[in-house]
Image 1 (tube, rainbow, N blue to C red):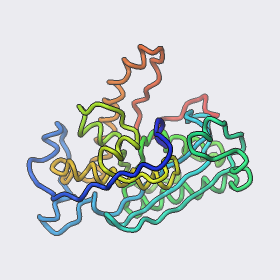
Image 2: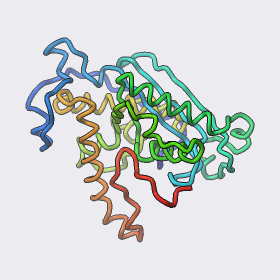
Image 3: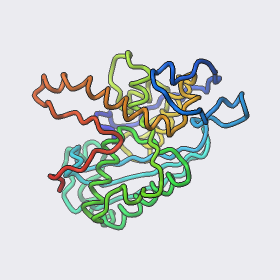
Image 4: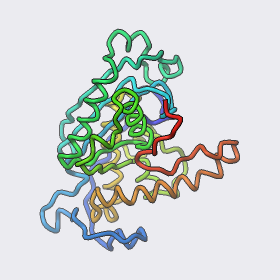
Length: 287
Protein backbone atom coordinates (compact mmCIF):
# COMPACT_ATOMS: atom_id res chain seq x y z
CA UNK A 1 0.00 0.00 0.00
CA UNK A 2 1.48 3.32 -1.05
CA UNK A 3 0.21 6.26 0.98
CA UNK A 4 -0.47 9.53 -0.82
CA UNK A 5 -1.61 8.07 -4.13
CA UNK A 6 -4.47 9.63 -6.03
CA UNK A 7 -7.48 7.32 -6.59
CA UNK A 8 -8.80 6.32 -9.98
CA UNK A 9 -7.24 5.03 -13.21
CA UNK A 10 -3.97 6.54 -14.30
CA UNK A 11 -3.80 5.92 -18.07
CA UNK A 12 -0.12 6.30 -18.89
CA UNK A 13 1.59 4.55 -21.77
CA UNK A 14 4.13 1.91 -20.92
CA UNK A 15 7.64 2.94 -21.83
CA UNK A 16 9.08 0.93 -24.75
CA UNK A 17 11.86 -1.47 -23.91
CA UNK A 18 15.28 -0.04 -24.47
CA UNK A 19 18.46 -1.72 -25.56
CA UNK A 20 20.63 -3.00 -22.74
CA UNK A 21 24.15 -1.71 -22.40
CA UNK A 22 27.25 -2.79 -20.62
CA UNK A 23 29.95 -0.73 -19.05
CA UNK A 24 31.77 0.00 -15.81
CA UNK A 25 30.82 -2.25 -12.93
CA UNK A 26 27.84 -0.72 -11.08
CA UNK A 27 29.48 -1.60 -7.77
CA UNK A 28 32.19 0.94 -8.54
CA UNK A 29 29.73 3.56 -9.75
CA UNK A 30 27.64 3.21 -6.60
CA UNK A 31 30.58 3.10 -4.25
CA UNK A 32 29.87 -0.38 -2.91
CA UNK A 33 31.82 -3.59 -3.11
CA UNK A 34 29.72 -6.54 -4.22
CA UNK A 35 30.30 -10.13 -5.17
CA UNK A 36 30.59 -11.61 -8.66
CA UNK A 37 27.84 -10.60 -11.02
CA UNK A 38 25.28 -13.28 -11.80
CA UNK A 39 22.85 -11.22 -13.88
CA UNK A 40 24.89 -10.55 -16.99
CA UNK A 41 23.78 -8.89 -20.18
CA UNK A 42 21.87 -11.15 -22.54
CA UNK A 43 24.34 -10.08 -25.19
CA UNK A 44 27.18 -11.63 -23.18
CA UNK A 45 25.86 -15.15 -22.73
CA UNK A 46 22.22 -15.39 -23.73
CA UNK A 47 21.14 -15.17 -20.09
CA UNK A 48 17.95 -13.30 -19.27
CA UNK A 49 18.47 -10.16 -17.24
CA UNK A 50 16.67 -10.33 -13.90
CA UNK A 51 14.40 -7.42 -14.79
CA UNK A 52 13.18 -9.28 -17.88
CA UNK A 53 12.65 -12.51 -15.96
CA UNK A 54 10.22 -13.83 -13.32
CA UNK A 55 9.03 -11.42 -10.64
CA UNK A 56 6.33 -11.56 -7.97
CA UNK A 57 4.71 -8.54 -6.33
CA UNK A 58 2.75 -8.03 -3.11
CA UNK A 59 0.41 -5.26 -1.98
CA UNK A 60 -2.19 -4.61 0.72
CA UNK A 61 -5.05 -2.27 1.52
CA UNK A 62 -5.64 -1.53 5.18
CA UNK A 63 -7.73 0.24 7.80
CA UNK A 64 -5.02 2.91 8.22
CA UNK A 65 -1.32 3.69 8.18
CA UNK A 66 -0.31 2.44 11.66
CA UNK A 67 1.50 -0.85 11.04
CA UNK A 68 1.34 -1.76 14.72
CA UNK A 69 -2.41 -1.41 15.19
CA UNK A 70 -4.20 -1.16 11.84
CA UNK A 71 -5.45 -4.21 9.93
CA UNK A 72 -5.29 -5.63 6.43
CA UNK A 73 -8.60 -5.67 4.56
CA UNK A 74 -7.35 -6.78 1.13
CA UNK A 75 -4.15 -8.23 -0.29
CA UNK A 76 -2.87 -9.48 -3.62
CA UNK A 77 0.12 -11.31 -5.04
CA UNK A 78 0.88 -10.89 -8.73
CA UNK A 79 3.33 -13.11 -10.63
CA UNK A 80 4.77 -12.43 -14.07
CA UNK A 81 7.10 -15.06 -15.51
CA UNK A 82 8.67 -12.72 -18.05
CA UNK A 83 8.52 -9.08 -19.07
CA UNK A 84 5.29 -8.47 -20.95
CA UNK A 85 3.86 -11.82 -19.89
CA UNK A 86 0.31 -12.38 -18.69
CA UNK A 87 0.18 -11.81 -14.91
CA UNK A 88 -1.22 -14.42 -12.55
CA UNK A 89 -3.14 -12.82 -9.70
CA UNK A 90 -4.18 -14.12 -6.29
CA UNK A 91 -6.51 -11.91 -4.26
CA UNK A 92 -7.76 -11.98 -0.69
CA UNK A 93 -10.54 -10.00 1.01
CA UNK A 94 -10.45 -9.96 4.81
CA UNK A 95 -13.00 -9.10 7.47
CA UNK A 96 -10.55 -7.44 9.87
CA UNK A 97 -12.77 -7.79 12.93
CA UNK A 98 -12.75 -4.03 13.51
CA UNK A 99 -14.65 -1.27 11.69
CA UNK A 100 -13.16 0.08 8.47
CA UNK A 101 -12.86 3.85 9.03
CA UNK A 102 -14.55 6.11 6.46
CA UNK A 103 -11.18 7.71 5.74
CA UNK A 104 -9.74 4.35 4.71
CA UNK A 105 -12.79 3.63 2.56
CA UNK A 106 -12.21 6.93 0.75
CA UNK A 107 -8.75 5.67 -0.17
CA UNK A 108 -9.44 2.11 -1.35
CA UNK A 109 -13.21 1.97 -1.74
CA UNK A 110 -13.74 -1.01 0.60
CA UNK A 111 -16.60 -0.29 2.98
CA UNK A 112 -17.11 -1.80 6.40
CA UNK A 113 -20.34 -3.42 5.20
CA UNK A 114 -18.62 -4.95 2.16
CA UNK A 115 -15.76 -6.57 4.07
CA UNK A 116 -18.11 -7.84 6.78
CA UNK A 117 -20.37 -9.46 4.19
CA UNK A 118 -17.72 -10.78 1.82
CA UNK A 119 -14.43 -10.92 3.68
CA UNK A 120 -13.00 -14.01 5.31
CA UNK A 121 -11.75 -14.22 8.89
CA UNK A 122 -8.15 -13.07 9.21
CA UNK A 123 -6.34 -16.11 10.64
CA UNK A 124 -6.69 -18.55 7.70
CA UNK A 125 -6.32 -15.82 5.09
CA UNK A 126 -3.12 -14.45 6.60
CA UNK A 127 -1.72 -17.98 6.66
CA UNK A 128 -2.47 -18.30 2.94
CA UNK A 129 -0.89 -14.93 2.19
CA UNK A 130 2.29 -15.75 4.11
CA UNK A 131 2.62 -19.18 2.50
CA UNK A 132 2.03 -17.72 -0.95
CA UNK A 133 4.70 -15.07 -0.46
CA UNK A 134 7.11 -17.65 0.95
CA UNK A 135 6.37 -20.03 -1.91
CA UNK A 136 7.32 -17.48 -4.55
CA UNK A 137 10.47 -16.59 -2.64
CA UNK A 138 11.36 -20.30 -2.44
CA UNK A 139 10.86 -20.56 -6.20
CA UNK A 140 13.52 -17.89 -6.65
CA UNK A 141 11.24 -15.04 -7.67
CA UNK A 142 12.27 -11.62 -6.33
CA UNK A 143 9.38 -9.99 -4.46
CA UNK A 144 8.45 -6.46 -5.54
CA UNK A 145 6.89 -4.41 -2.74
CA UNK A 146 6.29 -0.68 -3.09
CA UNK A 147 7.14 0.89 0.28
CA UNK A 148 8.10 -2.53 1.64
CA UNK A 149 8.43 -1.47 5.30
CA UNK A 150 4.71 -0.74 5.36
CA UNK A 151 3.24 -3.82 3.65
CA UNK A 152 5.66 -6.42 5.00
CA UNK A 153 5.56 -5.01 8.52
CA UNK A 154 1.77 -4.88 8.71
CA UNK A 155 1.65 -8.46 7.37
CA UNK A 156 4.10 -9.49 10.08
CA UNK A 157 2.03 -7.81 12.81
CA UNK A 158 -1.17 -9.37 11.55
CA UNK A 159 0.44 -12.81 11.57
CA UNK A 160 1.62 -12.25 15.14
CA UNK A 161 -1.85 -11.03 16.13
CA UNK A 162 -3.91 -13.81 14.53
CA UNK A 163 -1.45 -16.71 14.17
CA UNK A 164 0.99 -15.97 17.02
CA UNK A 165 3.70 -16.41 14.38
CA UNK A 166 6.01 -13.82 12.78
CA UNK A 167 6.50 -13.57 9.04
CA UNK A 168 10.06 -14.77 9.49
CA UNK A 169 8.73 -18.18 10.55
CA UNK A 170 7.37 -18.74 7.04
CA UNK A 171 10.69 -17.68 5.55
CA UNK A 172 12.97 -19.75 7.80
CA UNK A 173 14.41 -21.78 4.94
CA UNK A 174 13.71 -19.28 2.18
CA UNK A 175 15.85 -16.26 1.28
CA UNK A 176 13.72 -13.12 1.10
CA UNK A 177 14.75 -10.95 -1.84
CA UNK A 178 12.77 -7.71 -2.00
CA UNK A 179 12.82 -5.04 -4.69
CA UNK A 180 11.26 -1.74 -3.62
CA UNK A 181 10.72 0.59 -6.60
CA UNK A 182 10.52 3.64 -4.34
CA UNK A 183 13.96 2.95 -2.87
CA UNK A 184 15.45 2.06 -6.25
CA UNK A 185 14.10 5.16 -7.98
CA UNK A 186 15.18 7.48 -5.20
CA UNK A 187 18.71 6.06 -5.27
CA UNK A 188 19.13 5.97 -9.03
CA UNK A 189 17.47 9.31 -9.78
CA UNK A 190 18.11 11.03 -6.47
CA UNK A 191 18.16 14.62 -7.73
CA UNK A 192 14.79 14.50 -9.47
CA UNK A 193 12.32 16.75 -7.66
CA UNK A 194 8.76 15.83 -6.85
CA UNK A 195 6.82 13.10 -5.10
CA UNK A 196 7.58 9.41 -5.49
CA UNK A 197 4.24 7.76 -4.81
CA UNK A 198 3.23 4.85 -7.03
CA UNK A 199 1.09 7.18 -9.14
CA UNK A 200 4.05 9.51 -9.59
CA UNK A 201 6.42 6.68 -10.50
CA UNK A 202 3.94 5.28 -13.02
CA UNK A 203 3.81 8.68 -14.68
CA UNK A 204 7.59 9.05 -14.60
CA UNK A 205 8.23 5.60 -16.12
CA UNK A 206 5.15 5.50 -18.39
CA UNK A 207 3.51 2.52 -16.74
CA UNK A 208 -0.26 2.01 -16.76
CA UNK A 209 -1.94 2.08 -13.33
CA UNK A 210 -5.53 1.05 -13.92
CA UNK A 211 -7.38 1.25 -10.62
CA UNK A 212 -5.11 2.81 -8.00
CA UNK A 213 -5.60 1.41 -4.48
CA UNK A 214 -6.75 -1.97 -5.74
CA UNK A 215 -4.03 -4.26 -4.34
CA UNK A 216 -3.71 -6.33 -7.53
CA UNK A 217 -3.52 -3.24 -9.76
CA UNK A 218 -1.01 -1.62 -7.44
CA UNK A 219 1.13 -4.76 -7.21
CA UNK A 220 1.23 -5.16 -11.00
CA UNK A 221 2.06 -1.47 -11.49
CA UNK A 222 4.87 -1.68 -8.90
CA UNK A 223 6.25 -4.73 -10.71
CA UNK A 224 6.21 -2.92 -14.06
CA UNK A 225 7.78 0.20 -12.53
CA UNK A 226 10.58 -1.95 -11.12
CA UNK A 227 11.28 -3.37 -14.57
CA UNK A 228 11.17 0.14 -16.07
CA UNK A 229 13.53 1.61 -13.45
CA UNK A 230 16.02 -1.18 -14.09
CA UNK A 231 15.85 -0.70 -17.87
CA UNK A 232 16.30 3.05 -17.63
CA UNK A 233 19.39 2.54 -15.47
CA UNK A 234 20.46 -0.70 -17.13
CA UNK A 235 24.15 0.20 -17.14
CA UNK A 236 24.02 0.07 -13.34
CA UNK A 237 21.41 -2.64 -12.85
CA UNK A 238 22.42 -5.34 -15.30
CA UNK A 239 25.45 -6.50 -13.30
CA UNK A 240 23.64 -6.61 -9.96
CA UNK A 241 21.64 -9.64 -8.90
CA UNK A 242 18.37 -9.18 -7.00
CA UNK A 243 20.06 -10.54 -3.87
CA UNK A 244 22.79 -7.92 -4.16
CA UNK A 245 20.18 -5.23 -4.72
CA UNK A 246 18.30 -6.38 -1.62
CA UNK A 247 21.44 -5.87 0.47
CA UNK A 248 22.12 -2.48 -1.10
CA UNK A 249 18.57 -1.29 -0.53
CA UNK A 250 18.95 -1.75 3.22
CA UNK A 251 21.78 0.80 3.05
CA UNK A 252 20.05 3.09 0.58
CA UNK A 253 16.80 3.21 2.53
CA UNK A 254 18.64 3.99 5.77
CA UNK A 255 20.47 6.85 4.07
CA UNK A 256 17.26 8.12 2.48
CA UNK A 257 15.42 8.17 5.80
CA UNK A 258 18.29 9.98 7.49
CA UNK A 259 17.91 12.66 4.85
CA UNK A 260 14.21 13.04 5.75
CA UNK A 261 14.75 13.17 9.50
CA UNK A 262 15.37 16.96 9.72
CA UNK A 263 12.19 17.65 7.74
CA UNK A 264 10.06 15.57 10.13
CA UNK A 265 11.84 17.04 13.15
CA UNK A 266 10.87 20.54 12.03
CA UNK A 267 7.28 19.35 11.92
CA UNK A 268 7.46 18.08 15.49
CA UNK A 269 7.75 14.36 14.64
CA UNK A 270 11.42 13.46 15.18
CA UNK A 271 10.65 9.71 15.37
CA UNK A 272 8.47 9.57 12.25
CA UNK A 273 11.16 8.02 10.05
CA UNK A 274 12.27 4.42 10.58
CA UNK A 275 15.46 3.37 8.75
CA UNK A 276 14.63 -0.36 8.93
CA UNK A 277 14.03 -2.06 5.58
CA UNK A 278 12.27 -4.17 4.34
CA UNK A 279 10.70 -5.09 7.70
CA UNK A 280 10.56 -3.05 10.88
CA UNK A 281 11.47 -4.79 14.13
CA UNK A 282 8.61 -5.62 16.47
CA UNK A 283 7.74 -2.99 19.07
CA UNK A 284 6.57 -3.91 22.58
CA UNK A 285 3.47 -1.75 22.03
CA UNK A 286 2.19 -3.83 19.09
CA UNK A 287 -1.48 -4.76 19.53
